[in-house]
Length: 576
Image 1 (cartoon, rainbow, N blue to C red):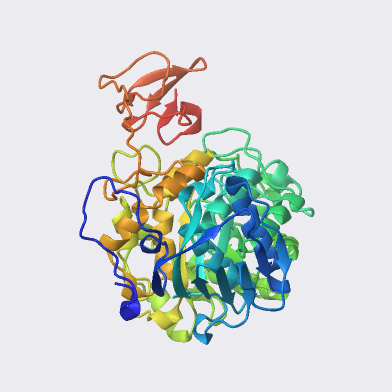
Image 2 (cartoon, helix red, strand yellow):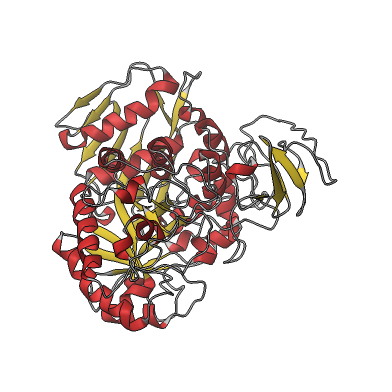
């Protein structure tokens, strides 16, 4: 039941395949309040116009761009100073004070759709709800048959936490601008408003730094398993930042320091204490690298990197990593942070980092991102007591790169298996002892890419779990109910299919088949195949295959799929 008893989610049905759900009962994340208007619908037609307050014109353009391809309608966007009596109105002002800066009120009558908020960001969040009230086929990029009916209702909604994030690691495997934009589009649908871009690690440096050019050209020249790697020019990085901003998503860049730095150490010998550049690394080991804390050139390097990236990034945060610095003593780590944290402030940013770093600072503006697997952590508890905010990303709940179970073919499992129910059934406000909800800034779902090579891999690991983490960040805890959520989640399937999202069909969720019945027949062998690698075959640990004339040995049992060819998934295949 949603708060104030405004909507009852019907969870009595427990079928293996859900039928098409009522739109008002399938919104993700769950709204604060939904009041249906029985028997009322609003039809979007060829004559519909989108009216906006001048400050909201960009949101109106975004909505029109979403709706035009599938409806085939012109949907002109015009500014208004009043309250239009028809069409779709996106209006700044007039929303309840309770919705704050990120919430909205959506009122659907037979005559009009009125969306009110206090800011464009709130209107943008409301547009994502309106989008989910329309048939899933609205997500297609080609014209579809109507009608386009929106159910009558008043929805009042605002987030539980102000920070609802997702992270993409582009260091282990490089992902081009188009893939990042595609992911940002997916994040926007679920009201994610921060995008953490993990730009550097042992296996690759992914952004141009003019004062240290070999970081990109040499440090960015490979990736996990080998391959060409890649990097973003400054213009490409700014393109990502602008694309996110148009979706009211703030980019948080990360340069992981002082560990996870082999790509930098390999690029410049002088950053090493012994003055010798190590070889580039393409494995997935961690904890062995460190900048030379005692050298002044280290801090010239760090300042140059922070200065150049900060100048490209309008958001308030700079993520300095700080995790798994096992090659750095505690004394060296403290000395390093004493010099680096002021540099973040010098260039107008607030420091964010993995939770280990806050043991070095009492700055209450510094945000600790908790990635541990336990529900007790003294560093994080002490930080919260000092007034520092905690961003919750427990690896055994929120890490999207963890496998769903032992049979899913990509992902890691060092933090355990994370099925959809595991990702959903935890409370960020009470998860770590001694960290009250008032100290929690929000939640973030990181996606590390040791095994993630293609956009389809991103889809498979992120969906459906991203939606679960997004709901934890947005919806009031009073709405939290696994049985209700799994039905609402299942209703997203036709939408994801229309968007081209290759999601994992968890057996825990009754997936909506869009009102159609489909039968899929897959021929899978159960013996150890030999010969040339092929998709849709069951490979067991130790199996050997050839691919493009190269022999590979299976690292872990799985059923192969297109896109998981041996060179693409070193977690599954070892080159012999």
